[in-house]
Image 1 (tube, one colour):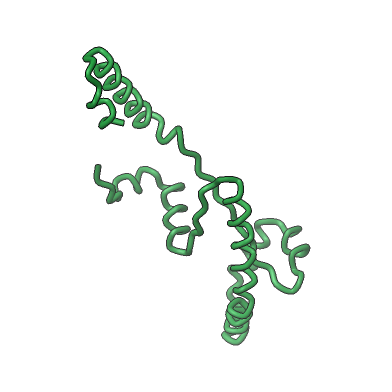
Image 2 (image 1 turned 120 degrees about the vertical axis):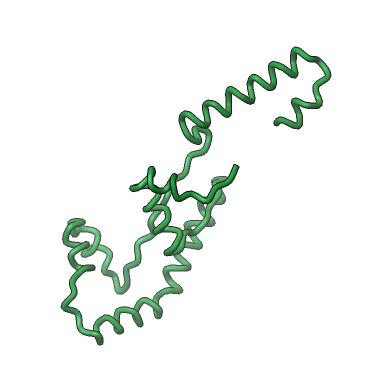
Amino acid sequence: MRDNVKEIDNNVLESSGKEYINFLEDIDLRTGLIYVKEFYMIVPYYINGEENGQVNKKRWSKLLDVLYMKDSVEKIVSRYRDFVKHEKFLNTRCAVIEDWLRSLWMQVSRLWLSDTVSLLFRSYNPTVHASQSTYVD
C-alpha cells in the first residue's frame, strides 16, 4: 500500500494516503489484527466406535482418564500401537475436513504438536509470550 501511495503525483492525495496508512497501523497496534480472524478446529480421535461413550463423558473425567498413571507399560505400548495403526483414518478424516473448508475459500493449515503447544502458550500467557517473541519488524 505504501508503494502505491508513493506513486501518487497529487500531494494532497499522497498526504491523505499516508495518513490513512498511519491510521490503519495505529488501529492494528491498538486492537490487534482486527481484519484477520483465526479459528481452530479439533478433530477428535476415536477408534472402534467409541465416539458415543467418549463424547458423553464430562471433561474432568476425560482428563483424569488421560492422566491415569496406573497403566502398565504394556497397556501404554498397546495404546500407542493402536494409534499408529489407526492414524491413517485420522489423517483421512482431517483431509476431508480440510478439503471441505478449502471449498468454502478458507485458508487451512494443520497444526502439529509443537504448533499446538505454542498456540496454547501464546493464548494463556500473552505477556510472557510477547517478551519472548522473536518477531522483528
